[in-house]
Amino acid sequence: MRMATELHISAVLDKQVINPAGKIIGKLWDVAVAPGKVLPVVTGLLLKCGHRIVAVPWQKVVLFNPRVVSVAGAIADLPSFEAGPDTILVRRDVLDKQIVDMNGAKVVRVNDIKLSPYDDTLCLFSVDIGFRGLLRRLGYERFWSLLQKDIASREIGWQFVNPLGINASGLTLSKARDQMADMHPSDIAEIISNLHRDSIEGLLKTLDHEVAGEAIHELEPELRTQVINQLDVEHVTDILEEMSPDEAADVLGDLPEEQAQELLGMLDKEEADEIQELMEHEEDTAGALMNSEFISVSPVTTVAGALEEVRRQAAEIEAIFYVYILDADEQLIGVMSLRDLLISDPAMPVAELMTYQLKALEVSAEPEDVLALLAKYNLIAVPIIDEEGKMAGVVTIDDVIELFLPYALRRKRHPSSRTMMGTSVSN
Image (cartoon, rainbow, N blue to C red; front, side, top):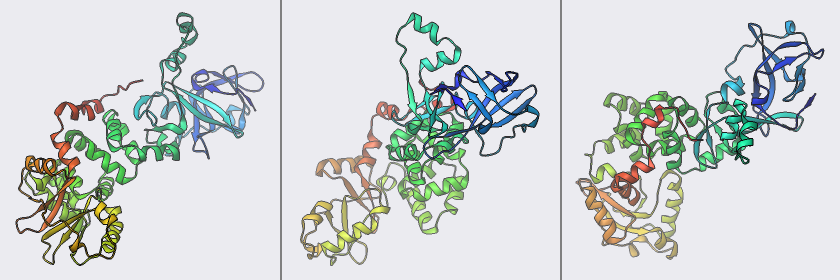
């Protein structure tokens, strides 16, 4: 088989297809692809022959270039196309669809697609998201170049693309998945905010549940609820299980009571009870802001033992700044920073090194009180105690900053939820 070094899909779609004798047998309707070792691989062509759409395996393609598309075999012998659940078609599932540009961390639309040979196969090599790709699709690229010499090309290699369609998401390469997982939750939240609602589930399915939970929590409450309502209950439960209790409480607190209780009922009982307790705190209190996960040790624990406890729990706790020292009745009696633990004698009991003059607030304290304490004593987190004086949780500085962040900045971080309902994206 002979083919061009590379070609854009716009140059061959709807092109007349001939047999080896030169007879026109139909038009190129679409191109089928499947995941490959490095890039998605073309597996066949779909031809429109009268009222039939027939499937041509790639092995029967004789010529495939912008000038000639030719296939071997009689049309009558070719099977009619039947779309299966795993069928991925370039025109149907990728062209004109939203994708995530992993380098730019933004949502864009595919205007054209470049196919290129690789390792004896034809692969989906890159996507064109720019004006040039749109002109090419419309057949005006050469005309426009006469009026304006330089037309900027905006192509993204497929390895830096995360497709958002349910079918095309099967083509997401491991590199793109890893890049998405490494994005800051706020960036992912902004991407979600700019998506059409039909694409959101596809995006979230490419993320592990912990990353998805962090991104959902970053959304504005109204949009967060819309996203939760789009997902099936099992998916939501899996995500909630990977969220910290305070973030899960924030998400569930925005839902109708019946729906929130249904989801809580599907979680582990101990975890559900912890989230439920956080949800019961009044709004605009330290209790509503706090995270109930923290590291604590007894006064007789050595520095080495405290550090071992940090290592043991580090994977399960979102942010660790201090180790709190509690007595047998869970009363808060002292604190040590991670820095103090790292520079202290490993054999020393923490009781001999901890800070006794501890600044703490009750669960009923107002957010302004938390902010004032953080600022006055230059703290990263404030311990919160319940009515009995027992350690209930911690409020970290990032939660307080987000609460008091000026409205204009919050709006800049989280675009209006109305954007998600539309279809426009920037090219």
